[in-house]
Length: 88
Image (cartoon, rainbow, N blue to C red; front, top):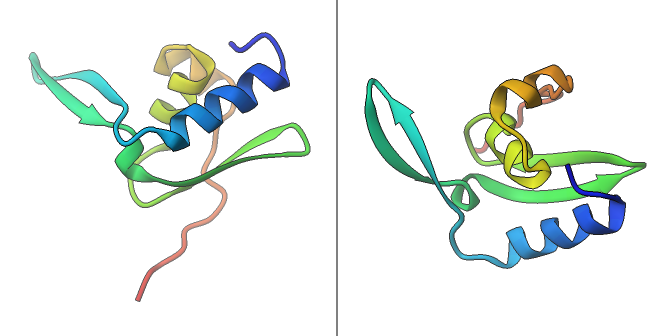
């Protein structure tokens, strides 16, 4: 995990400034490269909590990338979806 809130803020800024953030995902025994950045509309730190606004997908991979943790560890942190907004 980032050492402190400033490290996390720096990682968020770098993430949002990137055009692509590629990660290898293994699905059905095959490697697939996914772009984490394409799914993210916004990331904010609010009162020490990470808020993600996603266009699609799960917050787990994004949080894992930002915290430097694997998905199973992120699941144990209590990452949860709090709302779903539908676009017209």
